[in-house]
Image (cartoon, rainbow, N blue to C red):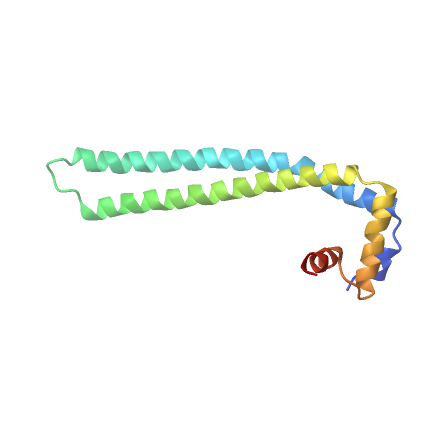
Length: 144
């Protein structure tokens, strides 16, 4: 259930609140994206360095037996660095997705007019009174 006070907010006040929140997010996310991008660069460097170290270990011992413990440790470091790189990549992609969604939301809410906001509040009131949501209405119309 929604708080009844939400239905008492004027459309312009609601629009102002939504836009200020989204614009604040949109101004912070590029900084986060840059940090994640720098972190990814460092993660790639760590990963590549560990792969090179492992390759050198195997190459220098051609004809000689490689110490199994040393090789195992080097392989584990490569795996750890690869896991770290993947995790950092996922965080970077998440920030980029959030940035795109936030920019889309700012664009959407900036184009909003009083009539559309009033309709949204009317829809919220209908749902609050036990009626169907707009999604449910459309789904019922498609199925029926």
